[in-house]
Length: 356
Ligand SMILES: *Cc1c(COP(=O)(O)O)cnc(C)c1O
Image 1: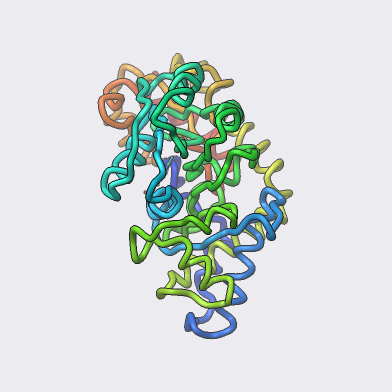
Image 2 (image 1 turned 90 degrees about the horizontal axis):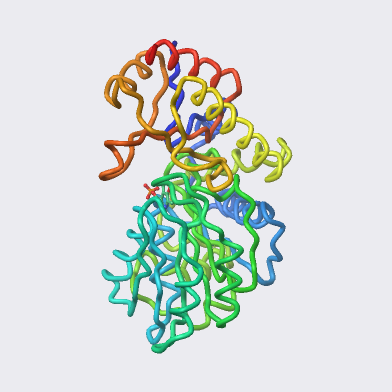
């Protein structure tokens, strides 16, 4: 096999169409062609969820997904704000680290990595002093494949008039995401469910939130990036080729039927993998109704991770280990990217041979 199939949660296997877009002409980021590229991406990002551009802005950044999450948290929690971070995995804990580094006044509501967010605990905390102004949560916690119940969390935030900041890095483009009134911003990246390459990330925010935006960072200042992009400029040298790939990936996304179509396609692949592995005695960490369509975590078979990984890699499949202490119990398979049912069928056939 000449091309590896990436079954890790980004970077993803590229379509030929997106890969070829990387060969477009060299482009200076002070030329109108670059601003056309930037404008088209910003407009298409809002169109994924049919968001009104007079209320919402897509702010494009050069960096990985973490840059977008850090820009969102550091730019949108005001100096006198108080942040509550909901943690149930590595990426929720990363938001806490961001709050610490930027000296944001924060608290955490920590959960076991395998647990769902406890809405009663959330409601209990929001009802107490000192007053929480912002809650941050991960939509799809890639640590375990759990899809946190964003609508329910947003509803609790709305009860208390609290703003919700969402790490949607591994869900944007594949999971249905309701931009409920409590949601102030979501952060995401080009190289996960949108099928671009690493280097471009973005925050979709309510324009009204920029009025009180503090500046805690030179590079990750969302208000500055948004202001420059609105006037067809850019504050720093962008990753032009990553933008080429993101534009093509967004065009391909629309041509294939948009969000509903991708959600359905991902769901079919995830279920195909889960059903096939179950027949081999490899069980999922959680029931499908709690999991994303993007990635699922499975209990390791007796052969162990190293052998499973290495033998699958020799056949062209890259799977993903569990994180932290979960690495001893779990492995993960993500079917994001240009992956087809036939690829999953081959993966299952190879896995059957290895665990036999
Ligand atoms: C991948 C991921 C990130 C960001 O990772 P980068 O390596 O910085 O792109 C953040 N949050 C979640 C939930 C992720 O899955």
